[in-house]
Length: 214
Image (cartoon, rainbow, N blue to C red; front, side, top):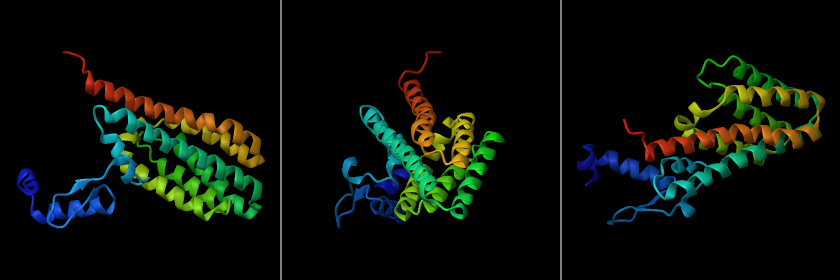
């Protein structure tokens, strides 16, 4: 039925269903129709991007999941940077300074493509290594994979200047190993960036639901 509806081969549909099943989004049963898994059971970091495709009454609840994603990313960033400042040796710390410099440089000279996004996650991976937190490294990798599933929607909403601001401040705090400033002042700077993105998504949703009459 799906193959006829979309004009594709049955094998193509089967492969797509298998991929969805591998991500835990549907259940495949022998000889029976595939069944969608309830979101609260299916959701993983890597599949959180499905929240962006919700419509109607499900949309607000799923946007809250995105808020949770950004909150987790912020908390992870601050915790790793603080831990690195507290425990990394000078040799272990140098790559972290380099990674922060690369992020700052990428945002400063952004041509509109927001290519610096990969440098932000590189900073988090480097912080996990400097902090000697291999479990957090796995978490950062999951956060990055999750972002890639949402990238097409989120990237246009990112603010290079705001990221440049917190990267500049973070560079200074890292040089001084200023744990207090990182813990106190970095979270609101990160939150400002995330709230802009979430605000953009909300505004976009209003436009879809209530388009201006021509």
